[in-house]
Amino acid sequence: MGRKYEYMSGRYAWNLEKCEEEILIAAYDEICRVIPPSQTWKAEFENHFFDHGNGVAVEFLDSINAVRRRRGLGVILIRETDIYDYGRSKDKLFKSNHRRRVQDELKNASADVRQRRVELAMAEAERLPSPHMTYEDYKTRRQQHNAESALSFEEVTKRVLACQMVNAAQTPAKPTLPPERVARMLTLASPSIWPEILPKLSPDDALEVAERITDPDLRDALVKHSLGAS
Image (cartoon, rainbow, N blue to C red; front, side):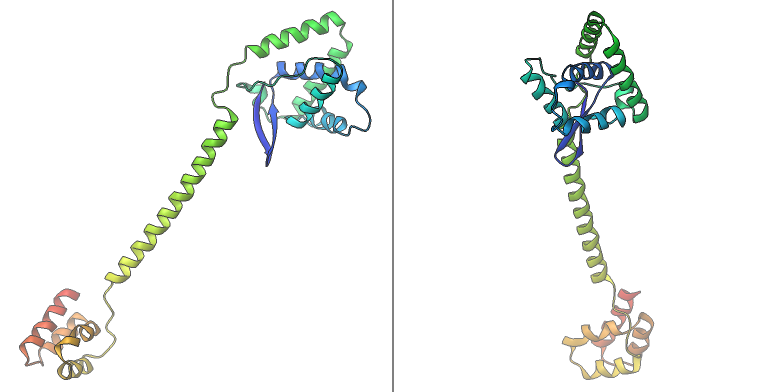
């Protein structure tokens, strides 16, 4: 009956349709007068269900069924179903008023009328369709989605970092030395360390230095650096 949901970590409740609420109210009224005052759940259930219009916590249903078993009465069986506008409604004041009204009507009805109403409510509850998705299926899908979302975020982060590293590696070093100093360094250095010196020149400075160099290999290296950095 109704739609299951988790209202607190590891604690579940049901949103019910009107027919299911009528069955629950009738079943509760059969045993409410014999519940010992020491059972604090009775006041808590009535406060949540009748006064505040909340869903029905599983532990309250378990407590009601425990009393009904001790009295030799049938228990309330839970069947997960689809729900309609009333079950989905978040208007708790409306639900609270409706439940109180049904409770008063059942208390004031004759035994035959009361029995007939419960039978009709049970028949209507039996006709409720199966859920499009059970709560357990929904919970499993939500966990999978969260896991996939976390993985996607991790993959996106990895890709961004990888792109940043590639861009950093591809970004040419900015000229940090004046061309006169670089020219002196190149003429003094061996060809093996030219690649470390050339990036210190801008394309225009590389051409300026090349005009002063007589060594053809070094001049070619300077021109090539100017082309590559352009």
